[in-house]
Image (tube, rainbow, N blue to C red; front, side):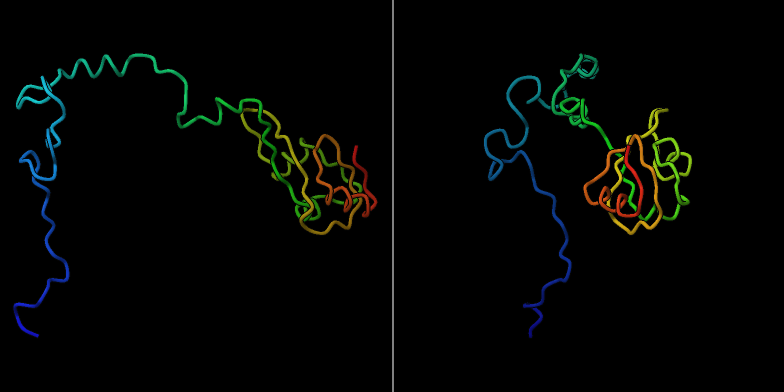
Length: 149
């Protein structure tokens, strides 16, 4: 190894030179002709404020899911294991009691729409009302002696 073959571990970063022809062709990163091409005199900042205040059309923004799927129902999932630990035998399971026990959060001052899923084991008979129930959860609730209204 010789001293002229050594390379630095982290070479210095050189910022690209702009506006001198070469690989940045034609306008060299300085836009088109006219007011924006001249040095020193650019568009007035008031014009930018006017453009920002114009109403924008609704389209593909960050809240697109709210604009194109407005009728979508959001369900709060609750597993059978949570029902097993929170309720006693012959308990009544509905969105109001699930909200009171802290198993389902409401939003905008409304009770949540709940879907009961079949993860976990249920040994107590429960009566479920006002909730959507998956097929595996329905089978487990009915096997434990419970009912779905």
